[in-house]
Image (cartoon, rainbow, N blue to C red; front, top):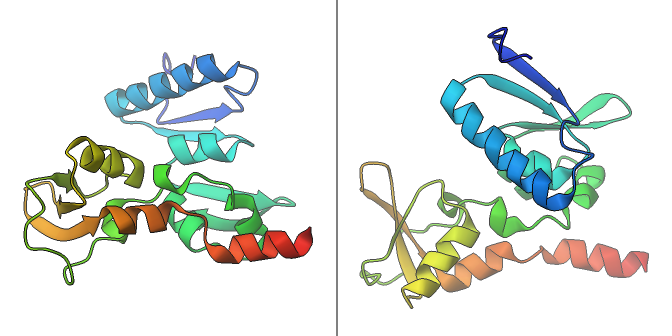
Length: 175
């Protein structure tokens, strides 16, 4: 209905919460494609962090009706505002949230990466697949113009995808 009125902002409150997981993923994909096409702001309310991370350019996490932290999914996962947020994001698949720009380096890596490139903004999981498919341990990160901005290694990808040790030690202490 909101689309027929050409509203500048679409509000979707738990729009996919009652759907089974497969249909839910399909609907999320449809929403992402639709949003690219219509270029409208979508405020999507969900209790599913994975859904928020997949759909949101910016995310706000609330506790007791107050915003505890807001930012990109990557910002929230990498720099949780407090212990509440840390525990909230500790099980997140970091490979689907963190981008190669975060771990790219310009020193200590080989000059050649076997021709493998990944664009800035690529998530770690996609970069790892690209590098694995090419059987390469390194890749050059390039901007939209094809200019090299850094180099990543498979080892740095894996390290960045692993849950930080601080989460593991706090979990062990709780058990």
